[in-house]
Image 1 (tube, rainbow, N blue to C red):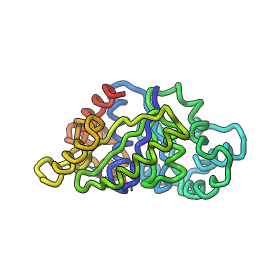
Image 2 (image 1 turned 90 degrees about the vertical axis):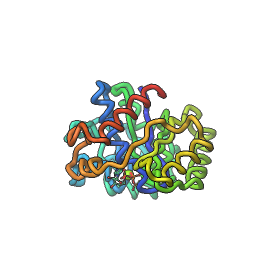
Image 3 (image 1 turned 30 degrees about the horizontal axis):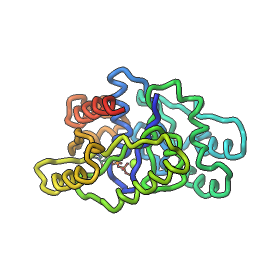
Image 4 (image 1 turned 30 degrees about the vertical axis):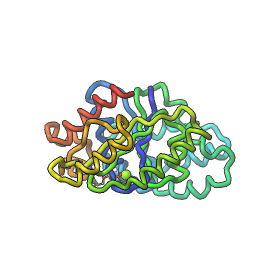
Length: 254
Ligand SMILES: Nc1ncnc2c1ncn2[C@@H]1O[C@H](COP(=O)(O)OP(=O)(O)OP(=O)(O)O)[C@@H](O)[C@H]1O
Ligand SMILES: [Mg+2]
């Protein structure tokens, strides 16, 4: 089994869309998956149909573990859309601040996920668009990091700075962490800009760039509005096909 963080500090790059539909594609192929929403914006949670704030949330588990108590995430799993999910809560933003002075604060997520590790083939963590304490926790708990990038505009500086953080985390906190790769999203090969972005990324990171590109497809956004993954919305749209292709390549790379 593997834990995969979906992370990059750039906003709107397709992290949450990938965190829904890559696991959904793997589920279609017969693999067991679990999603964790670690972004206080709770986009993933809402996109899978959970709109209310839970009584008890991942934030409470953060606090319990930080206080040295035994706690884990199993009781928080929701399966409303058919994809097992640990929802986020707005309160998670507070965890950032509270964690600052806690000993072992980078390992809380690792401890939370430990009892769940062997129950799923793949656990995916959707990270906020920042290198925050939450993202560091996710990366420390993970075997791999997957980085979606919008093909419209390549923030190469941002990618380089993210890679420096990755190297630091690997060196100091999680030597087993590996790069699974970059995935271009909202891709349109007719656009020169999109092809230029791909070329630049390939020159710098070569085989770390997935061959599969996720094309721009409105159904991906519409499915999120309906609270379901793309396979429960329109299984033959380009978005559904691209994420299945991505899942196949994902399995080859992992
Ligand atoms: N391939 C695509 N085609 C069309 N729209 C897309 C595609 N991928 C993502 N979107 C849309 O783009 C917007 C941003 O995507 P998403 O929420 O996945 O990015 P994000 O990286 O998670 O953003 P944030 O950094 O704010 O968490 C969303 O409205 C989403 O529906
Ligand atoms: Mg997101």
